[in-house]
Image 1 (cartoon, rainbow, N blue to C red):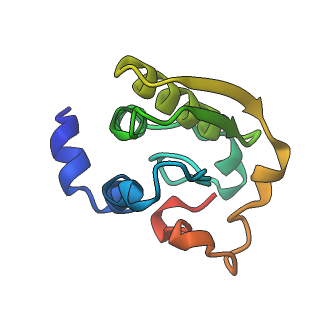
Image 2 (image 1 turned 60 degrees about the vertical axis):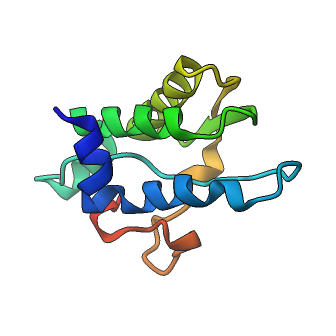
Length: 134
């Protein structure tokens, strides 16, 4: 898998790229809160099983790349919802950020994150991408 090509060209990565491209526009002394759902997963064959889907290999790779791309001069704390793929995404971002010398702390589950984006009427910061439902 060519992670750089995926990062630079895949449509589903567009929001992540834009976050990274624009994060340095915030003042250096400001606190930034990002609410992300999860990286790439397959579409469920049985809709009831959507909560059990894990990340694809591409999803893991892009979450790590996202972590590697965050500004290293700001420490990060990661929370995730109770859904496995959200935890996987947070762990991959943590791994990527630490691999480039960033200071990262895994805080663990934060149950209120579970409901963010479940309702299609919620479009928080444009992160409710149609290809990343559930």
